[in-house]
Image (cartoon, rainbow, N blue to C red; front, side):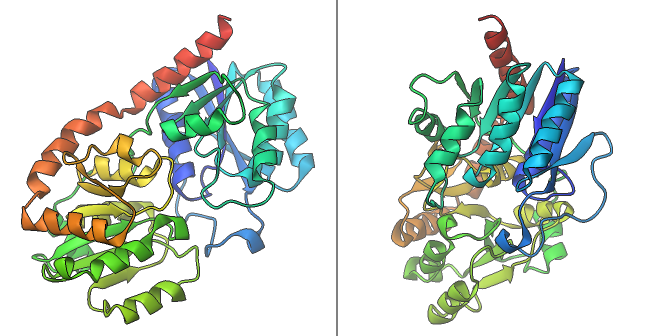
Length: 377
């Protein structure tokens, strides 16, 4: 079959672009003809919170990526739809993650849906950071789609706020395997200039308020964590005013305990951060699913997550790590338990077993089944 994925891809950077490229590759492995229609302008520069929207280096040589869409230029939406119609795909997959993208993606879907099926992979339906008009914009996009793929049950419940009985498939976020093979902890720590005998936690990814770095910093200052001489590596670009966090580090006297690598982490460096740590911590205040969890699974790392959104669905408590309340005391208690009782080895063994549930092959075959259910109606 011919399948077109609409969403970010190289040279745009970030987890959604990585996902789209991995999805396209797996669909190609299954024998489909696939290309990605991406953005030539994703966000106007004054709306983008980071330093740059673009990745360095070479793009994936085995993928066709066409940057046709501007999120703010309606002419590009019509041109994109016209181009896709000429290609006559069996179905189109659209990634939806933010109401800001609804006018562009919804209009393209509306122009296409008379001639092809539209399947939306909805990362979020209700955004983590809410703004006026979100529901109106999301409702417009959702009405243009034939079916939906959600990667957490919380998103499925949110979808039902817009459509009573959506044609929807729940399939967990697959494990990312695009960041290279694991390396030894010793090699990773040498690469990052970390103490080979130290104790290290990892907070990874763009730093936004809903990701709860402030909760983790407070937990790091807790007495039961302090006595273990643990250090926290914060790896990722600030998408919020960094001074708030720097002031917390000073106030909590954590300057010697927190290692800041707060620039965008290139794809080829990701493995070193995950392999260097003992446990990945996601102290989120709100979430649906998380690509960070799936990177941790790839590198066989235990995780600590908060009990929000779909995170508890992905990390069995007491088996692959911890699921705790979203407060510093609960986070601190779990960290202390991890080191006091030497949980790393047992958790890592369980992580290796658990990640077998999250394969790309299974994910794309579920999408294929969803498409055939639409055709058979």
